[in-house]
Length: 373
Ligand SMILES: [Fe+2]
Image (tube, rainbow, N blue to C red; front, top):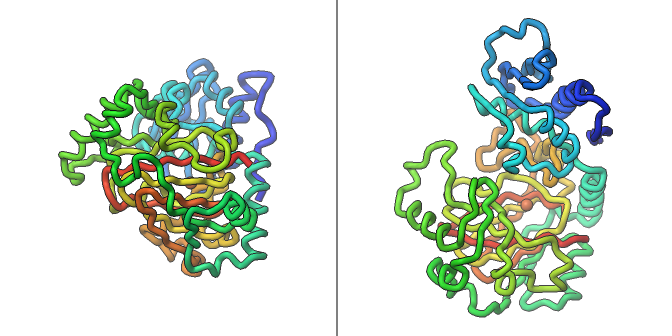
């Protein structure tokens, strides 16, 4: 289904607010049957405030605004305009967005509403369609293992990418080798490098980040509470100073979008990233600890219940770590390939493959970079 939203600018604020409620309605899905009322207040235009009423569909209501809502969201008009200007690339963690919005009450409802706001670009839709057709034609859902290539040539890598086959690359020899990297060594080499953790309110040096990480690691995970911000870089841009050691190991650096750092304390019993797919080919280089990836070919999209409102990546409603086959019965048929990445190994996941990632050791460190083409 094409859910691209046709309009990103509005002549008037009132039209933008009307467009915003349409955007929410159009992207809303409710397979889990969440119910509730969310009052959305635009402080500059109190008369345009509305209640989002969750049912099978989202009802936008403006009558009886005095009702007690489960959640109250206040969102300035400038942020609504910005959501439209950016919905194909919008990142809710951006402090310039999330920092302008206030929430009270049931935050799960607000979170659900936020998911409805984003839309894929036509480019992303086309990439997923193409991957689906190609994987079906090549029978990728019947693959049972990921091919390992020891010190492959660029040509071998390009051939695998052309057929949209995932591969694990071994025999990489960064200096020093990955098995020799420790937190202390990172601090020694890159202690002054700035890590811009997206959800953090301030910039941190690598030395400060590692100090926090060690303090956290000293506490058992069962003391974690919901909403606890764990010391985890969440895909922050890899500091420039670390590029020579951990940046792209093939092709030219310009062939990739800037590398991202996934480093920190991670629980090992739940996924570090839930089931989703990306429209670009991803390279994931494992530096510290191990990671397990579960991969599903793009032609199995119908079995995994991907969300219709997404932008830079497409998450799924189905959660393999807690499968609800009553709600998502087709997922029983889905076939997955599991692969464990050891330090020093790199996986190349062509665009469109669904994947879920588990850290098997904590602390854990990986660097990822997307191929531009
Ligand atoms: Fe991904």
